[in-house]
Image (cartoon, rainbow, N blue to C red; front, top):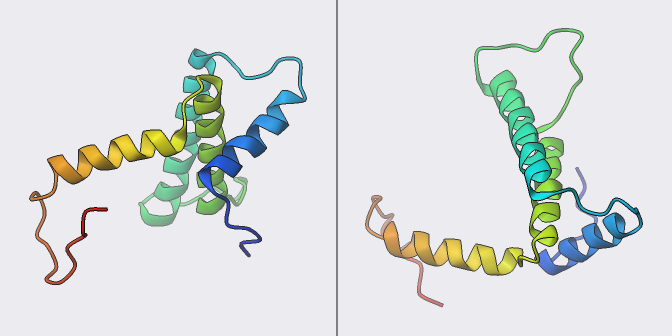
Length: 118
């Protein structure tokens, strides 16, 4: 798909919020969003299984793309974060700090590819 714009995390959060804010129902509850997130992850898993696994699609099944499924997952994740007033940039930073510390010597490094601390 042709990428029309490279969104920042903040821009994605704001665009989703503008969309959701036009409806009286607003964001779903955290429990409902967790169910939606799980549902979307399952749809991505199904697409991966069709593409890389042993389970071919039935002729009656729609043609989804990995890009569509990842986009659906991202949308629901942004809804979830927005509904709880969580910045995805902050959440990403926390995760990367944890991973870069915990796993920094876990894998075999490619010589000359060490990431410098920012």
